[in-house]
Length: 399
Image (cartoon, rainbow, N blue to C red):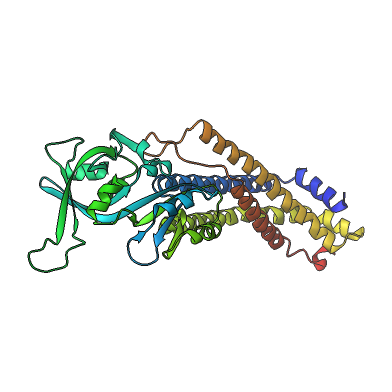
């Protein structure tokens, strides 16, 4: 153990004769604890919010989606789907048709997005478990499952055989201009209502694939997309190479993140913004470390001159106070992380903070990545603060 560390350890834990110096040192340590705890908790809270926000897309959006490179639809033979299902990295495959439709019920109407799906759809996305009133699709006739938002806007009920929900779309086969119907309407029965979140509930409805193909005048193997559930950790480039030999028509593959690119970008931007704000708070807190070291240098000036006279180098004196700065930041940081981790785990297992106006526990997640970010930030800013504090310790002043 070097003499610099021994002296730094002694200076750090010894009490000064001047009470004000002791108080400043204690306050500096407390500020490091508070800022470290705050940054760690805030980053963990944003990780929880990110997970909470993306959980809706995990329910509603597949791992990957195959879309036609040109046009709205493409032909995918049943043999191709079977070949895709045989790929080890793919767990489940389901065709889908997604288009905008015009809904009308009695004297009310609105635009919505229809998802016509097969029976395999629920092996990829558990949307059927979110039907809170009525039943999921039976795949036996013209029926629909709508969100609570659509149901509220149109005043829909379930299994109302006296009043059907009318779905209107452009007539794809209309070619002439005279004596032709530009639109066609299909009546359907509402079998169930689902609830995910307000935005999705008022936008989407589901029906069976055969009904969708009849509605949009499509061929039996004509779809707007193929959705996939894959083995966790499967990379897009690898999956694309595995799929490509089985497709005759050009296609492109998009991941869940690409399906929700705006949401992902927003969450990343917000996370970066909060990190920068609380890093600034940490910088302000570390000004106390600068003040503490300056006061300690003034308080130990006589001892420093004695050490210099006994042969200590200027670098050695600098190292003593660099170590003291590291001790303040290190001990404060460790205490702060212990407090932060304890609060995070307590919130995870025994929630004591709820989302305002609800009974939902505030989402917060412990991530080792956030711990490393906080430690790296503290080490960098702490080093800069210490270097700034001891910059005035020149050989001239030590004589």
